[in-house]
Amino acid sequence: MYTSPTEELLLEFSDGILTVTLNRPDRLNAISGPMLSALSDTLQQANIDPEVRVVVFTGAGRGFCSGLDLKNEQMTGNGAVSRAGYRLFDLHNSPPIVINRMDKPMICALNGAAAGYGMDMALGCDIRIASEHAKMGAVFAKRGVLPESGGCWYLPRLLGWAKAAEVAFLGDVLDANRSLELGLVNRVVPHDQLMTETMKVARQIANNAPLSVQSTKRMMRLGMEETFEAAVDHIYLQLLPLFGSEDFKEGLSAFAERREPAFKGR
Image (cartoon, rainbow, N blue to C red):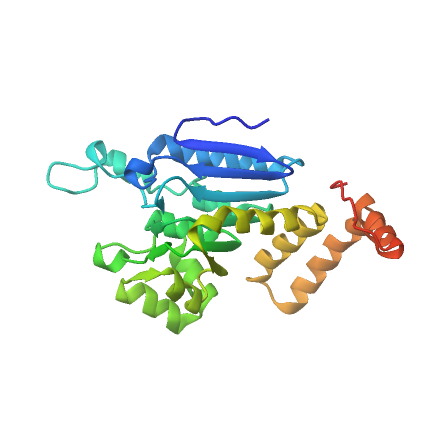
């Protein structure tokens, strides 16, 4: 059902879980222009595909993503960003925007270094499971830029203002344990167990009622910007169709019969 749109973006679908792998290991999975389009298209398709219940996002080789690829044609002779390079920073319908809009849960299997654009995309995922080799390269201030693809929005919400300021202003590279201590990742696992542990989490989510999971994520996202009263009203409106779903009936039946539910997403 899912075929890789390019050799630089590998797709694998099984049991409701779509695994998306950035595949430019020789460039630490730096994102090229064609990869941006392929990734956005893939995620948008997954978001409306009822067969997809969870998206796992990872990288090939020793890095997750070193950021946008500004090498060669993206730079002018004096080292400034070229007109083509500026187009890479246009966020319209780009992966960070698409990730933020996703109703399907996204898990980042952080296999190595995530820097710049790569760090921002990782922060956009709902859950981050880090290899012991993983690093967050929050070095924007040391490159004369800022977290332009979501980091300025995510960091204060994930860490609170003071910790976010520390991460953003110091420009340090954060190893896996420091990232866990700050709350940037959910857990750290041995490198050779990263995908095994990630898929355990993905399968547990995929076995739950997908309409419930997606509605919960949508309400959590909107609730970040709403008053409590507005959130309660919106949640009630989301709850009504769930009460009429087959999955709601299956959940009640499974509970009464003391068995595992078999949800169909209907």
